[in-house]
Length: 563
Image 1 (cartoon, rainbow, N blue to C red):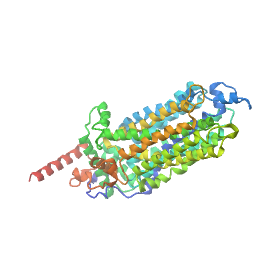
Image 2: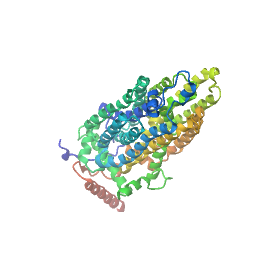
Image 3: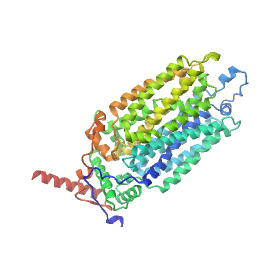
Image 4: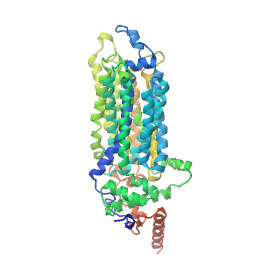
């Protein structure tokens, strides 16, 4: 049936605002989650490359130390300042990339923005491969970072907008799983090339990144655009076609009509609440209202910013960025590269637990449990590290060192099953359509900002050079203390969004608070409240037609009230 012949009418039944889950929906979301490999792979290869003998010689000019020269071995590493710069500059690029992507996603679409990110990332990779010193490596990582920022922000937005509500948490958790796969792949490649005595030792791990960019970009040319983007732009016919494609239903299906009517009605409602002003005003809308009111945009944006900040302050990327360097600095581990590979495997194997747990127990519960578990594990690691696990030459207690590594793995497992995926799930769900792309962009940029801060300060925290803090295992007391803050944040500020459509999440945040959100039950639809259940809107209509239908409904409601 031609699209123009279909009239969109909504439903009052809160259980019928979305079509049944199809295999196609799973496939689309799974492929979009592939973008997480960019994030993970880059996190993985940099930490290993920084400890490669050839890379250290290439970038510092120092000769390889003699076999028995312990002093030369101790000094054979990149300066903390160089480690900090090469690692953190990518996060600087991703910070700005995520912010820019928030604007672009509304202007040119979610899908096109991700493809653009792949192109920018490729340019950065070329510079990284060509580098033989910091002069080219640093700008290469900065440019690649902008591309990763595009991808990391908008993949979450895209997946959240097209995923069915019953499995949205699980499929968005697939993004975090792809991050862990990326880290694992990077560590495997680095482990294979670490002993090469040529530029292939670091150029091979960097060059493989091209493959991820090509696969994601080509795939997105095939996948449909987000229907919520088309609704925001007033292109209802394209929205209906995109939604029909995602849900695997004919365009005139009742399911498509009901869900599209709910999206349209919610957007129209939010447009009445959120003023449409200048470009600067549209960014200011993200911080509109009181931070103490759960429904306000400022509260949602603050939750998104703090959510991503707390995820980084768990200290997880300390392990994946500087794990090899850290394990080497302890002086108690004979093969730091192997231990890093083991911690990565733990990360990969633990993340799939979230696919089931996030829909069974909910986002909020997982965050609280995860933060509690990490606090315990990290304090245990710190205590062992400053007592039985201290480096004592031939008297070193290797059993204690093994126990310390084991509890680091338990800590990673808690993160991978909870804060790793749930932080991404929540920021994709809490924003209304008018500010969603910018809200997700701001939240993601917070992740990269704190990622950058950690990348800058960590080499100095665990470095062994003069002037460095040389905390060693004591750094886990810092991460454990910060996880206490994450626990308090999750309990007091994070709402439960399990099993709700994005439009129902909007309503829940109006009517409940974080601590009682799990008890909230949908009781009406936006389509009913905005009058789209009585007077339909043609699929070929415009925003003006929608406004006319809403105004007519309001007038009829007022007349009925007056009578």
